[in-house]
Amino acid sequence: MKILFIGDIIGEPGRKTVARHVPKLVRERGVEFVIANAENAAGGFGITPDIARELFAAGVHVITSGNHIWDKKEIIEYIKKEPRLLRPANYPKGDPGNGSVVATALSGEKVGVLQLMGRVAMPTLDCPFRVGRHEVEALRREVRTVIVDMHAEATSEKMAMGWYLDGDVSGVFGTHTHVQTADERILPKGTAYLTEVGMVGPTESVIGITKEIAIEKFLTQMPRRFEVAPGPCVFSAVLFDVDTAVGKAVSIERLRIQD
Ligand SMILES: [Fe+2]
Ligand SMILES: [Fe+2]
Image 1: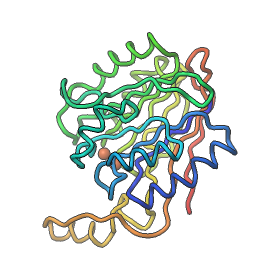
Image 2: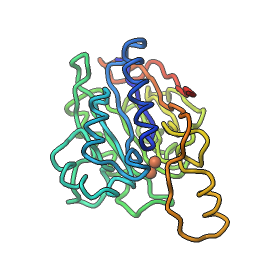
Image 3: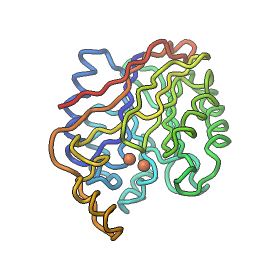
């Protein structure tokens, strides 16, 4: 089964780029299941119910998120009722929403998706490794194909998660830092891996934000409201093929399409 995993979608420019590329990739590359990180889809900060619906309509099967999940308060009621929108599984017990889901691909096959968040230079959450192991075991009782979004700042933490889950999941992909890395590979026991998928957002920017504002903030160390940058976008994603009989990856291709 061909699966597309899309990195952090930045604001309206990112959403429009996703809506253009996803149907094309489904048509031309035979993509059957789409996962997208949308923690920055609402003007760079969080996601709203309308935006989640917009992304599902564009062909996304499961939306993942991260530290920005709670930025828009209307998402709190929505996430309780929409299992296809995930927040990191290692948030404190009792937080709204879920960190994993089993969803159905265009082929009718079932796919498990798990969202975790790192703890290096990130909010203090439960251990993503221990929570991840527990969640993967639960998902594997139901499905063979399991994909993990590891939302983290540190390359080392993402890489460690890839090795930790190698052979037990079909793919581990990093999100959050918005700049794609070039280390895509299939790990020895069959897990597709990429440290950072990158963003779908404006190229002439600082990780999606207007560059002048970002520079000024670094220069002055004073609070400034971030704004999504204008201009053409980069579409960053990973396209991989899973042997669904065993849940192992057979190919991986990094996508970086510049408008
Ligand atoms: Fe992000
Ligand atoms: Fe993030």
